[in-house]
Length: 289
Image (tube, rainbow, N blue to C red):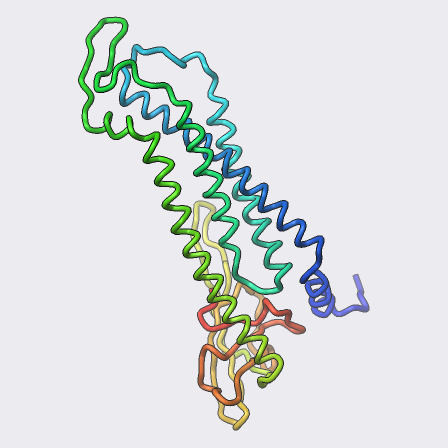
């Protein structure tokens, strides 16, 4: 199909319209709430699974309490895990579109973990108590057995399972905050250079595809690209960035470089764009994966 609009320009205009759009913000909020709820479902399922192992550890195999209950909680928990993956990815993408920059996408994962912690806590409050603390009671043949180490460990699972998830949630939150600050600093540097720095064309001199292997085989997941450019003083420099782009072609003028003319050798102040008409998220900083 023949088009009169440059696809690269159309992409830039579309992404710029999304940046700061109230509809995108509303979508990010709804997806974040859905991630929290999905995490709660996953936590209920995780709690139900832990309860099964707990029951096997602290009770006799002849204790048939709860055997007639269908495993709805575990089924809903499995569905919650799938929803967690979808809603967290959707929330992260919406946040990136609204803010117009990378970073900050770790917070949907924090919401998922927070919901899972709450769901596991609620589930643990409803677990069946043992027939006798310290003894696996056999109600049929009356061959009771004293608890071993693992039985005592699982007896207290109603406390340590939610606590473990809470610790993981707090650790992830700390990481997300640190990453958010790092990306915010990069964004401030990039915005300053877009206003007052040097922006020059660059030559793509090397492209190395990055591969990943899984059960489906080997697939291309991105590339490592080296570009060459001349700074404000005419000195030839090179910069290497990792990108998700895979269709790059070696040749002159295939990239752009943004740098600080006062500090042309400062790697943290060099950004590379591999697209025509780049948007803010297309400018790759040092260490970009």
